[in-house]
Length: 498
Image 1 (cartoon, one colour):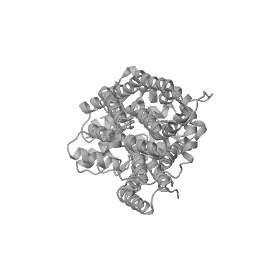
Image 2 (tube, helix red, strand yellow):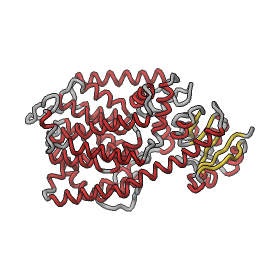
Image 3 (tube, rainbow, N blue to C red):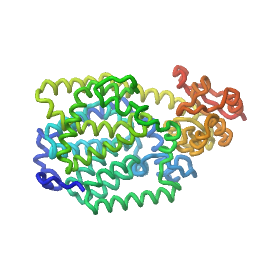
Image 4 (tube, rainbow, N blue to C red):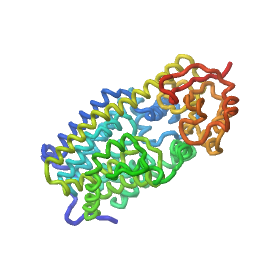
């Protein structure tokens, strides 16, 4: 097992106030900058991301006595973070708005990530490395966009950082932190297993007990501890492997390749990667000599989640990038002061980061505005025309499911409707079979499904042919269209003929 390096004796349980208040330390200014950046973007994006509202509805039902379910009476684990779900339910029970509760929590989580990793970097690498990471984490717009989403990914990063810090400090709560990391998200278990090599035996026992208790509770309530949301996405999108998923590695290389995923986040990172890539290599080499430190454990924990995305070739969702980017930034922050001596390079990097706000604000605000107009418009239509207790089949289900909590919502990917995922495995025609078996009162379909017979998510055709599509939809009548200017992404509303 890795042990604390002999030249780095365990520090006190908490840093001295004098050191923490030192303006030269990588805490005060980065924390103020981080809060300013998060709040500035949050003021322009008042709503959480689409997927966050799935967990919000689960939490609302739980807080109001229906249990941790999306639809009353349907025990399906359609969220990826039971602890985050429980925390949101507590907030709602206390009368808090879930979006405000989530953002407040995630702001604290981001501060914990910055301080914990900054402390580890300052101790095991250099103060300059800690400053590099803290400023990047505070000011790169992606992190503020992630915070605005209201998703639990920021909590995952905080638990990686706090677990590594508590292990490094031999804190009494290290085992609890390790256990929370193991259950916060599926990839958190991999990160916890990586950090367990640096933990004490009793910490591993505490974490193992927490993991076992959680898995048992989920199995007893839902019938399985595996999130249906993960299984459904695996079925819909598949796992093509690393060579067919450049979105997870091209942004880390300072060269242009014939194959490209061209994600906005990856494109934005490319100018930075020209310097960050060699810095990350230098950082990894330097960290190898300090591999007994918990800082190496944090780097490995973040790398395991990146490796999972690489190996599976998972579809790109921007919040999945958080752990890989944090791990990359951690290594680059260690290596950059070893490669760069002149202040002008740091000034250039500061201009690069600052300049990204001119574009990335528009990127994240544009996504939020599109979701609000498209899904919000559909939610308003259904709230005005659908009756309580009626059923609805659609995808995505976040905003609409949240705004129409009196409707029974089914999704055609299978996040909360396992039958949809199993039908997809049968091949083309799965949507027609789903309509026949579930008999929803309302349908929301993308215009592309009607025009090109293609589903919103996944490559499998919803109908075997055009005639099957017409027969399947014959039981419904056209009710309207939401955001007709959205082209194939416009939502077409149908209701069952009465």
